[in-house]
Every structure is written in C-alpha cells, then in structure tokens.
Length: 177
Image (cartoon, rainbow, N blue to C red):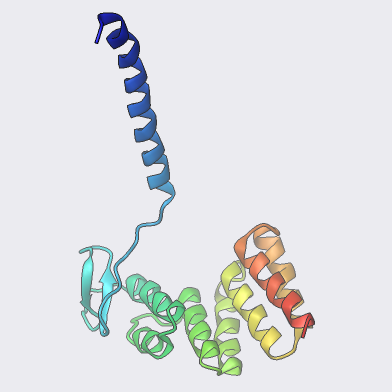
C-alpha cells in the first residue's frame, strides 16, 4: 500500500466510521427501550431494571399501570385486571383507560365504556381513551357516538395521529359489514 493510497483512504474510513456511529445513535434514540416480559405474578420495575413481584410495595403505580397495559395488549386480560387491582391510586385516567381496554377485550363492552367515561372525565385531552371509547361504541353499533370521539381526537392531535387513524379505520370497517 502506498502512502498516497493511505492518505486517501484514511479520511474515507474516518467518515464511514463516524456516519455509521451517527446512524446508530440516531436510530437508538427513536427506538423505545424494550422491556423484557416478566413471569406471571411479576412486573417490570423501571427503577431496578428487573422483574419484581407485583405485590412488592416498592413498585410504583406507574410501572404497575404500564405493565398491566402490556399484559392486556398481549391478550392477558385477566392478569392485567388483577395487576390494576393492586394500584394504590386506581382512579387515574391511564389506569381507568387500561381497565376499560381489558374488560372490553373480555367482551364486557358496557363495563369498559364505563371505565373509559371515567377516564375521559379525568383527562378530556387523552386521545387514546377516546380512541378506545370510540371502538367500544362501534362494537355497540353506535357509530354516531364513535364519530363524536373521532372529532374529539382530531381536535386533540389532528388526523395524522395513530389514535385518529385507528378509530377512523374501525368506523370505516364497521360500515362494510
């Protein structure tokens, strides 16, 4: 290898190394931290970064609430509800929304709607609860009420947010049947 080729190649290698590092850093920021799935009866503790017993008094409500939602999204609705039952402050917009989600998915739509309405009362600007409430109304055949929730979501986050798009799709799909 000649000195000229080393002089030419070195800056290119440096640029390549730096750009791949920047690409990794940028991608890393956008990636949500993946929390491992905990065994039944345990919850991810964000402070200790490990699974702990869901009955641990050291586990904050926020972690219990978030993990309950994860359980519900994984189809583990009864476990999600049991975990929500351990909250010290169960009447938060988020906890009530997730309780509504789990009960609705268990087929108890009216009960779910009740929880969603309590959540909306606590935080009228919470787009996700309005999406889920609208989806529950679609299940009940009340597309008019689902449309009202869609308009509320539009005023909260516009038409490009996930909540608006998901509810619009559910409404649209209901008209095809």
